[in-house]
Amino acid sequence: MTPLHGQKSLMDKLRQIDYLGNLLLSPRMVAVLWGLIFGGNRYPWSSFRIAVPLVLGILGWISFYIQQRFTRHQSVLTRLFTNWASAIAFFLTISSSILTQSLALDH
Image 1: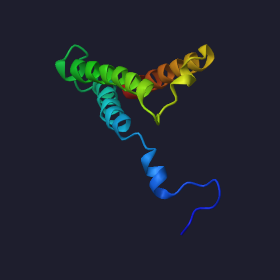
Image 2: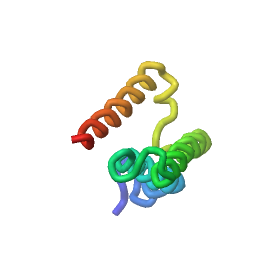
Image 3: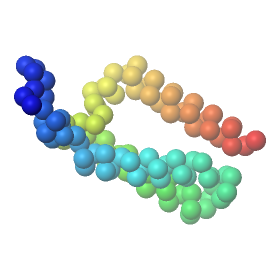
């Protein structure tokens, strides 16, 4: 089946997926969320079981951001964070999500 004018074939779409970026981001997100969810509830915040996933997750986010700057097909457009309003909105969204999660787990 030939794609219509302007449409990409399935193989072209699969070539545009940032496999390395997704491989970097997914386990790092799980590590950070695991640390935030279990920190203070199941394990104390000072526990290595919380500190290690949080540190590795944050370092992974940094490596993901650096990788995104140099890849051809980005998973997350880094130019979105060059605008101060977008960067602040992202920070506020993450902060409110963490706060909501921590309040929900305290009860």
